[in-house]
Image 1 (cartoon, rainbow, N blue to C red):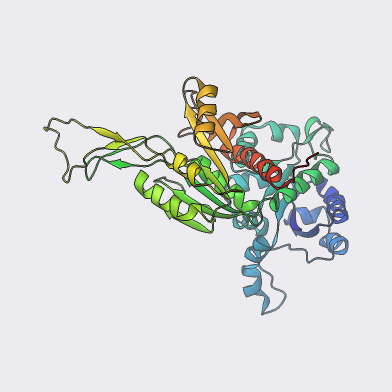
Image 2: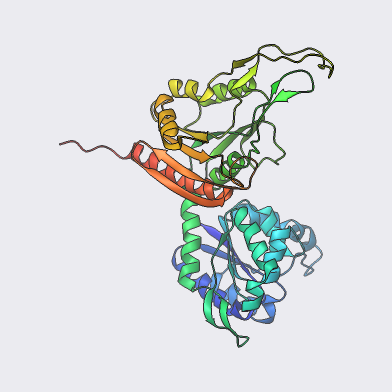
Length: 406
């Protein structure tokens, strides 16, 4: 495993040397990236001697006439070669750059370019830590799936007492190792994910749809890719930019989604159905736009139950995960769906709760299997994606563990 260790400008920068050494003891290659401010506290030579790797200190190297072209794309090479990005210490300015997508030095550009897990360990003055701008930036980063190693409390270099001291080295190292452990959990798995709503046409300009944003499915696709899976994402209409996946399939109607999923289901080892497929579609679709003056009367018919069809076709060893968006009799409805549709797990969402679920960046619920129900408190959909995949990994491990008979 290889990580990039970003070191930014603060008095805690000297502690990054110990973090690098501890990671090396765990068998991790460490390449250090230093900001200009960090070099005011620690010399790059320190990290080069410790790691045996080149220390990156600037975006464009001017050491010789041939180096500029190589260094101009070096952040892409590093981004593709690492299994995680750790920034310790992370200053308030660095958090702001990351949260707002500013790429004005090598480290901030590397953050935008990598798809590997990101861990940041902030360190700063207590008032800077508590400032509304810093807390908002932290919330944004958490929402994108960045792991934040909370700073400790105590006597700070500035003379203040409170939060802001860099977390203990062991805590930071364990946070990174947890991400690296996840990195290979789904290696070799072909994961098929559905996301977003479906639109069922009424006439050439109108449709029947729902409020699904697709964020949950997109977060799962991105998280599964970070864990080593080959991911196919079948998506209804959304305003989201697709994450980096092996195959992205854009569909609109339930019929199109069914066709795309059935075509790929046989090759999938894990299928996660987050899409909010319309349950009904008009019996007849008008060939022309229906005029306002016309008496509008629509007759609907049920759409195909894609999840149930996949459940009936699944082969031994395939995992199938569904979602249940409910407003009443939550557990009974979810467990009934789990059994009827032959699922390994179902994610229950109470979509009557304000600010959660459809159209929101946050979610909560329960992950239900035949044996247990795991409660998920309110969190970002990126964080929830990791919780769901943790359950998927456990289900896969149970499948692969041989049963012992007397």
